[in-house]
Image (cartoon, rainbow, N blue to C red):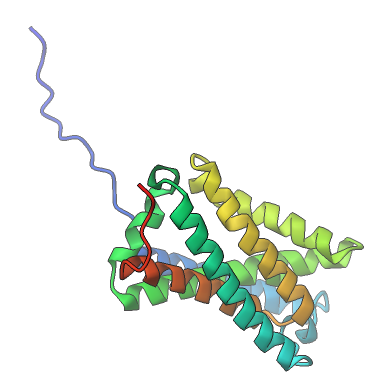
Length: 202
């Protein structure tokens, strides 16, 4: 006689943006502390991180890059079957606008401080060409998104934005620029999904 297993199956825990906000915020603070140490020890300067020498370039970079990357995201979403999209990306638009704002803000803040503020800047110290630093940073950025490994098309979806963030940072030397573009892209695309302006291809 086969024994009956009365153990309930463990349900897969749903992605919770509120938890992610706490994690991203904590890592952003740690990354900011590392940047502070790099400035104190003269590895980086404030001018490398928050230059305001070219305000018009900054404004145009934010406007054009944000619009361009949102359009890129829309084109990818409309042309990609839903089965090729990571499940996490299908779920967090169901939350309130406040939660979406906090999640996309904290995520963009952490990733830009870490990848552009720390990694790309340190690479710039040791490599001769800024584009080499941008490409290496992008490889590491893509590598961190392990949840996309099973959905390879998602890796393309973050490679193009990462290259853009790296390029506009190298042009402006102001970390606020890639951060704002990153945040506006994620927040904008998520709202378009939330309000059914765009839908995934079936």
